[in-house]
Amino acid sequence: MSRLENLLWRLLFVLMAWIAPPGTGLASPAPLPDACPRPPPGSVIPEPEDLRSQHGVLQLDLTVHNYREHDGSVRYCYVLADGSQSPTLRVSPGDLLVLRLKNALTEFDSDTARPTHNHSHANTTKPPDPCTSGYMSLTAANLHFHGMTMPPICHQDEVLKTSIQPGDPPFEYRFRVPANEPPGLYWYHPHIHGFSNAQVLGGASGALIVEGIERANPQVAGLAERVLIIRDQDLLNPDAPPSKSEPVVPKTLIDRDGDSANNGTGFGKPAKDLSVNFVPVPYPDYPPASLSMKPGECQLWRVLNASAITYLNLAVLFNRAPQLLGIVAIDGVPLNQNGNPANAIEWRDHIGVPPGARVEFIVTGPPAGIPALFVTRTVDTGQGGENDPNRALVSVSADIDAPEPHSRLSSSPEPLPPSALPWVGNVAPVRVRKLYFSEKLSDPSNPNSATDFYITVDGQTPAAFDPASDVANIVVKQGDVEDWIIENRSTELHAFHIHQIHFLLLDWSGTPVDEPFLRDTVNVPYFNGRMLQYPSVRLRMDFRDPNIVGTFVYHCHLLEHEDGGMMGLLRVEPAARTNGMR
Image: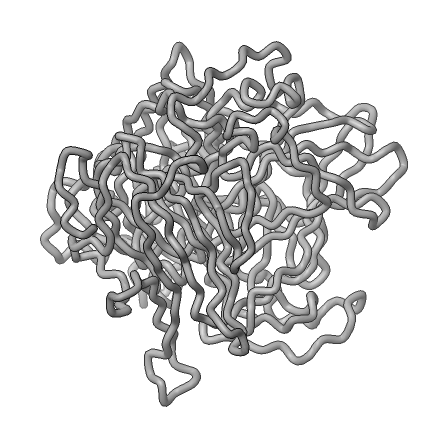
């Protein structure tokens, strides 16, 4: 739907509401067109629109819309002028990105699918500058460029105060991709505190690719590439019984967030449905989306887990047999980031991907006549976690006439220059900090009361994140390298994420880990109540890049946990300044 058509429909709605107010007996106006249409289950996977930089600049106008469905759920989407949703932004290191974001979100009545025009901020004194507003609501908008090493300042990657309201003029994001940004898959999504879960669950997300992964790893040169964005959403069939093809499982339990709780069987009703490039794969039968590949063709799949709360455990099956997948990058960073060519590819038959994380891997298409499935296996999220069962995602067919994907990597890449900084794994940390995840019932006497979520620096008092506070939980100095130990003192799995930087995983619950790459999101194992010590990860945090000076956040990337207070504030001071909280 074009912008002009959308405007005409909205004007018609206003006119009909004026000439036929409630109680007149006149016919109601026709419903507004769907601003965020989705393909039906079982569809062929559409490829997102590719927007590429030209002469070192990528400019685009993006509008964020929402639409309430008949079941009451609300979709969110980023839309180009031609109606295409969630374009993939393709840039190269050193490019300038200029993105003008228009907020066209609408507030809805509680008992109707029609929009109201009395926004909740209309009777408040709203600062005229979106950079200082800090106003957070379901109709506020901003963007976080997840994984990018960018200054945490307004018009670049600041999410604490930046808040664009409906009716504001288009807000310009303008930043230069760092020359040393690792080539790989990143993404953009809203970061409105308290409302990120609803907006991302509704579909507000898109991929951002820093080009040049074949320059880091020539083994992928010339491969066709496919961008697959896996999102979650509220169940389309919440009252349906499980499929008869599944084994009988215990009665579905509902957690305090209203989702299906982990039952430990690998089956049963999931907490959320999944979709692939917006093609829904709904419970209970999980009709897979579909794609075709030439028989035996190798492709680079770039997979983003844009889910709000769902963990993935990805595999490709030929006749139910798992196939080896060649991982070349995690969270936008090539596996040979440490400079050792021997680390270029890691072959596995399944890949765990927490919410917010990305994985890029080589996949070989099935031979002719062999059925293939792209699936997610069950993830044990702990006694307090949601149910993430086994389910199909995509049916992959071998077809000699399969269409060519939109994009193909260069077949003759120029190698990337070596990093100017020593490998962070070889840098001694200047200090070690301990943080921990924890949860508490808001009413300890009521087991069904809401959960309060915390991430706490050891020695500080657990407290939910306060967006009105400018007091940093942690202060570091630009140029430093630190080790952080993140414990999980709760009975559910959490996914630690920090803005602006990547980190190196060193230790997983006491077991040393030798990874040659960096991450920006990592699972922290849950506490089962019987362990002699809390499970933890040890991370080497790299604060050496001068781009990151400023204030930003770290949090659990299960967005209902983040919105519920499981977030902390970090300030990176310039190297010349004294660090008062060392």
